[in-house]
Image (cartoon, rainbow, N blue to C red; front, side, top):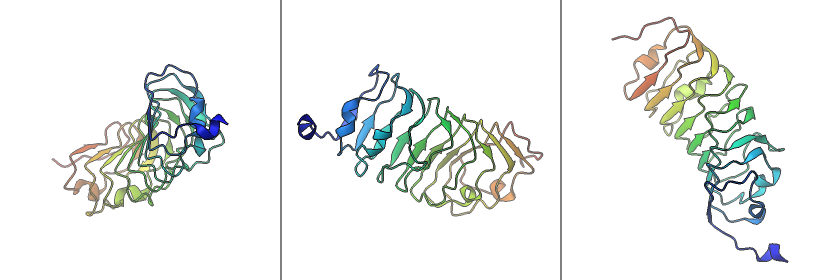
Length: 216
């Protein structure tokens, strides 16, 4: 049986593959650590069988710059238990923001058509860089993102439909260097805790409905 004798690969990079579907041979790959299918023309749903590919070994997954629309019978929590790096940006993915596994460090799903609220991500203790920009997500910014653990360095949610106040309580123990909340519908005043946040290197709150002035 060819299935039982198929080589078990560790890294697969097929950029510019120029195929409209996921390579079927991936179905029988159980030891992958890196899978890069970015910059292709893969269209439609991410097939359900992909949720069973290298579930216990995959560390790096890049599906960016395709024409993916959604997840076929996936749960809203990704199945890859050790995944650290995930790029889904620049597709046409709709629906709610999927929650990555607890192991995630880098999570980019910008430039899609996601809707709904940002889910609670407070238990992602290793999350360092996150980019949800240029989607259609609404609701408020989860309060826990303002007093996240010390791992989070970059928080980008620009160009969505987020509303309500900017969270207060930006904890002094944070390590956030970049905060981009621009081009939303955030209201009320800039929290004092954010204005006193000393280690920021980049902050953008522009093009919101905030009625306040940043101190000079």
